[in-house]
Image 1 (cartoon, one colour):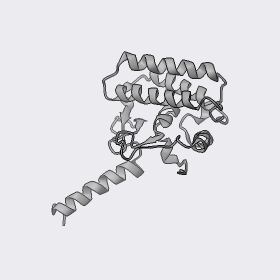
Image 2 (cartoon, helix red, strand yellow):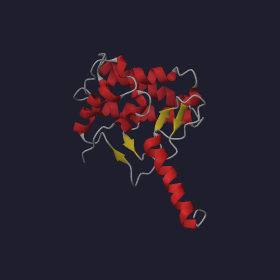
Image 3 (cartoon, helix red, strand yellow):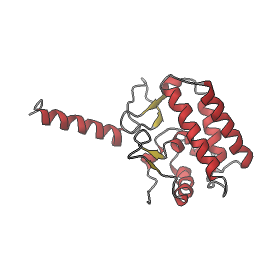
Length: 183
């Protein structure tokens, strides 16, 4: 299955969150899709992140995951998702942090080069660990993606108002109209 890496796919606010969000509908196993299941998509992600990631100023051009490192990278992606998802829900577990740091260290040992997707994703996750205001880390109420709420009053509900916010509001409007609350 082929996907295009659009700006919406990079709304997490940090490369590590965008990598974690590469699994679509993660919380619904029946509909979940791993965008990195196809190796070409993983390579395309590095090119797209170079142009679209919120942290793109940290590197010139991201290099794809080094051949043979794909499984280690995917294991790190899952550790990122588990740790930051637990942090966003307020149920942070030190074992999840330990797991994140352990897998990040393995990834850096296998390819420590700046500008490669592996190293830059680990560095992004480490920057997130030092987030001055952890309440800014949220989970989208529509798709379940992780994102940084950079709004002035920390009031964002959706990763992207143009996509998830619009879908949620349209669905709510449809349900109200169907039940007869609107005319």
